[in-house]
Length: 58
Image (cartoon, rainbow, N blue to C red; front, side):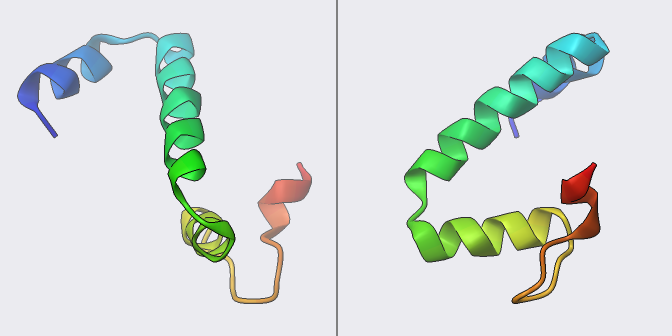
């Protein structure tokens, strides 16, 4: 990651970080096909194939 972006994120408020995260996640998700979306989701939440990670319910 470029140092300027890292610096901006370190200086950001919690709300700004959340906004950046949701923006990036939507951009990444849009680039993936259905199977890759499932794999990405499971990797993010440390789920196992065929199981929905429990934190999704909260």
